Each structure stands twice: as C-alpha cells, then as structure tokens.
Image 1 (cartoon, rainbow, N blue to C red):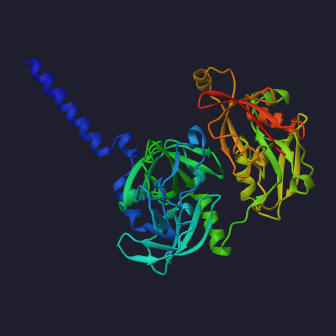
Image 2 (image 1 turned 90 degrees about the vertical axis):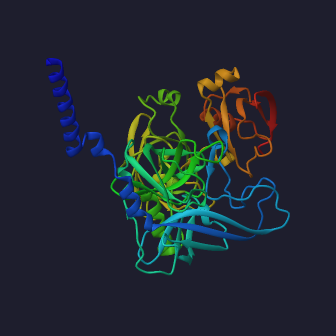
Image 3 (image 1 turned 30 degrees about the horizontal axis):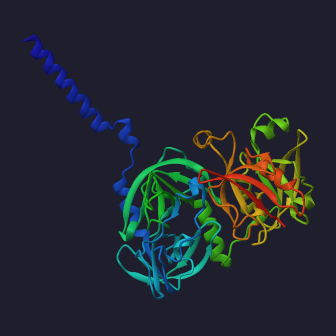
Length: 468
C-alpha cells in the first residue's frame, strides 16, 4: 500500500511539474522562435523573380548562360551560385534562356532587392507576389562586386520586410530563409548562424553570414530573417558538390545590401573608396620577423604610385591595424572597410612601422575597374592561392605546398597553371605560404622563365612560365 501511495505521489508531482513548465514555458521553449509566425508575417513581402535572356542557349553541359564564373579550389569547386534550374543536355538552336530566383520588397512603392546574378544580362524580368500578381520589373542597377541588384515594379501599398542590423548578428542565433527553391513558391526553412564575417574565394567586399539553413537553387536573392522578424541577410551562395544543399549556405549582410541598394536608387551605380595598396596576410613567421606578438593586421606588400596611399606616406612593410577607427584583424577585412568609406573624405589609417604605431590621414579616391582597393599582392599576377592543410600534405606525401585557387584569364599563368595545382617550389624556393610565392616572383630574374615544380592531380610536374 505504501508503494502505491508513493508511486501515486511521484506521478502527481511529475504531472504538476510538466504542467508548470507548459504554463511558464521552459528556457528552451522560451528561446525557440515561432517560425510559423515569422513565415506568415514575412512571406507576403517575398517575391519570385523570373528572367528571360533572348537568343541564348545552355550548351551541352546544361549550365545556364547566366551562370557566373565559380571560384575554383577545394572550397571554390564546391561553391555554386544557385539561382536557376535549366533543362540539361544540348540545345542545337539558340532559344530564350529562363532563370528563377527570389527577392524581397523593401518599400511600399515597389523597390525589390535580389542578387545581381539572378537578373544579370536578362532581357526581361518579372516579379510575382505571394498573391500571384505578376509585374514587369525595371532593373534600377546591379553591383557585381557584392552580388546585389535593385528592381522596381509599378505598384503601390505593397507589403514590406523589416530591415534589421547585420552588424548585430551573432553565431548561434536562429534564422529563417524564405524563397522559391527549384521554383517552389514561398518555401521556408530554418537553421542557425554558424559563422559571421566569412571570407570566400574571389569575394572581396562581402563579409558573408554563414548558416545551416537549407537553401537550394531558386533561393538566391531571398531574405534571411532573425527571430525578431527582421531581415539580416540576402541568401546568395551554397557550399555543395552536387548543386543542391549540403549543410552550409551564405548570405550577404543586409547592411551591405541596403548600402548598395541606396546608392543604386540614388545614382544607378555604386561608389567605393580606393586606397592603392596591395596587401597580404600576416603569417606567424612574418609576425615574428616584425617583432609582433600576434598576426592581426594587413601587411602592405606594395604601395601603388600616384594613389591616396602613396600621397599619404604609407610604405611597403607597414602593417595596417585600424581603418577609420575600426580594427583590421584579418587582411580580408581591409578591402571592405576601404570600399565602404566615403570618397574624397579623409580616412584615418593606423599602421605598425618598425615596431611603432603611427597614424596617417588618407583622402580616398574612387575605385574603378582598373583598381583593386586593398587587393592581394598576387592580384597583379591574376593569381590566388591558399595554404595546403596538414592533412592534405600528408595525403599527398609532401612537406609543404600551396594550392592554386584561381587563375585570371589575362594572367601570365593562364594556360599553364590550373585551379587545384599544388605549387611545391618556384625558382627552387619552397612554397609554404602566399608570401613565399610573392617573394619568389618578386625576386625572379627578368627575361627568364619562372621554374615551377608542382603536383597536378597528384602527379609531379615541372613548368617554365614566361612572365614578360
């Protein structure tokens, strides 16, 4: 009898505890967003975007003609801009090519943000709302450097999204993605922010938000929404080997997108600051050689003549640690800070020179297609590389090496090097980092080919490349 009483008491207490948790809400429940409400509130302002490019054809690979050049390398090989689904197989005759994407309305009078790669080169753009009304859209402008485009449709009193602050995004917070994956209207998926400020190959001006929210072809240009119902990003790229979602996606921070959209609305183009330096990361070896305790900052490998940096007195060997009061922890941060700074206005640059901190005032000029603000020291060679990971060195049976990420079409290495090549030695100098390659190329004798020892698909190979 005592056993039964005790058992009844335990059951009563368990039921009471569960009821209390249900009424009060457990910590886990309190922190879990109401995704149904988030989707309901935001879906009306999310649109489907359809484009038609006349006289184009996909070709035998089945890739759509508007597909941008994909960054190469082990990570780049898996990055796919994912804005459309096109029929596979050869197309014997030129025919209009169609693509699908997403976007979201930012003003009641019909301004829409999407990705530049969704609408780039299109002859016709149409926007379909959640109520199935369809409008012909005008392309106000596009910015390839950030992959942002601004559209305008002739409509009034439209539902709009609420714009958040992407500078406040934190790793681990919940996010919701809404778009049209594979053309399926207004699909919602959720996940968390898995990284912020992510640098991607060939992407200079965007500190991507990385998430594990499932997105697929057709989601491009759609909003990434936080638990407060605010748009914090524009879905842009995925990490994949199949063309579909594999666990990682990337979004353009909404602060970047809105800055670009405002400029496109005002002038139809985007203005960026230009400093005039070629930079490289500060490696452990370089930090020790400069007498530094850490690897923070951007090392100036070269100051371009007749540029704002040269006029201000910056020198090769300076390590830029702050720009306009904002810390430069990684070299990849500097181009974004420079690009976002006002043209024609003074900017404060803090550098470490010979172990001492110095400040310079630089009046930025405007970046044009011939200039690269804060670009890599290898940019003049049309080449980008990345260190070879320890595991990869072990699998290849080498003690050192750097991997080729991309080779520009006009690079002196075009036709010789390929993405995925592992450079072992250049002019007999071992390659352990980008700085080793820069040093070897800078010291190369004039009018003599550069000797390169490399691995290509695991096989050893020697090449002689004429840089003149």
